[in-house]
Length: 145
Image (cartoon, rainbow, N blue to C red; front, side, top):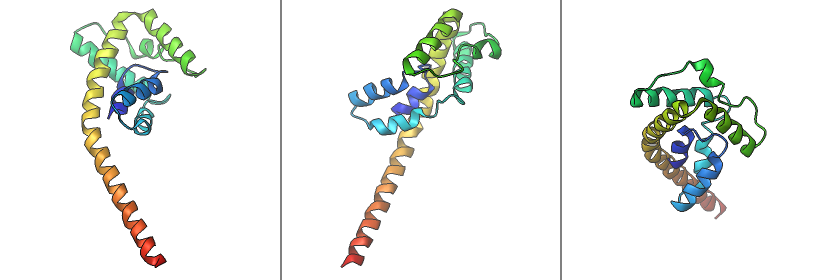
């Protein structure tokens, strides 16, 4: 659920670093966090961040820019994590806090709302997978006897 939360925040380019740090501090599974941040990829980042922005504008009651102007913030190519993050940060800062703050607020709210149901669903999946693996191991051991 920590990875899901981070996937919805406007942290393009440093999400893996954030997941590593947060999941280490919380003693959570880093691999599960990495899997969840894959939700935000080059194809899904524009609509995810737009949704973050629109919700943030609504909550903060500020003026909204057009989707075309907003989508110019997101880098079109990836030159590595740090370069992508710096390019994104530079583009976002060019539009200023009028865009950055609503994105952070909206991303935090949506991230929390998405993370809450993710934990029990993921936990249930892991329990079922472990039960299946145990049954398979037991069946193989019985067949080997």
